[in-house]
Length: 260
Image (cartoon, rainbow, N blue to C red):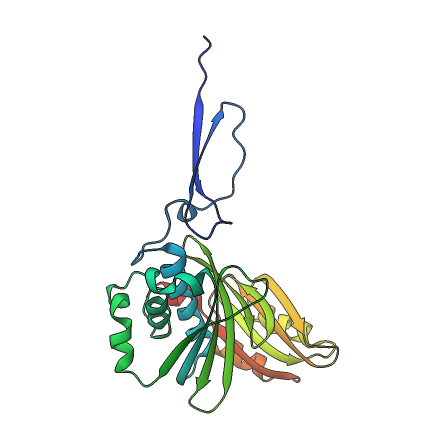
């Protein structure tokens, strides 16, 4: 019998709502190229029980807190699909509250997030929501800010602690927030995007991803720009000073994820 070398690839089935490990055996010469992170295989460092229902939920809410970036008095969580059906058993509710408190996914205080929130200055509620065709582990977070502004952020936990911010105030975003990001609301006018990119180029920023969505022609647009480095406040202020810019903010992931 001819000797054959075999290779095992272990991964997580990302289409499933629960973690399923796949073991695939390939003979030598048949091993496919796989662009996969080790974190997708073993999952994140976290407080359990579930990487998607607990760790992913906590990260979703923590990123939403960074996007809102101002004091808030109430958060309403609309739970969709599997989140709505199993949130108590998986601790999704506690994880979401931990996230809006700013606690990380591996923070042991996650389990006591209700008790911590009881001493904070905001209230919250949970309800079952139908978010159409969004991933079954999804949530709509509606923040009532201290200044009266309403902010809505919809996102999904797609497995292994990974997330996608799907919408901000109704605009499509599809943000993974694995790199620092500019979130810009602007008037839908010719030349605005080129002016923004010029400011970034002048300040030596490289654009990784850019996405623009709008409600209708000539209305308000949302521009999402992911960069290779954290974005300085001076750069954000320069963008805010451009004509037709309504608002601009930076979510600096590299500094935040380093613990700063």
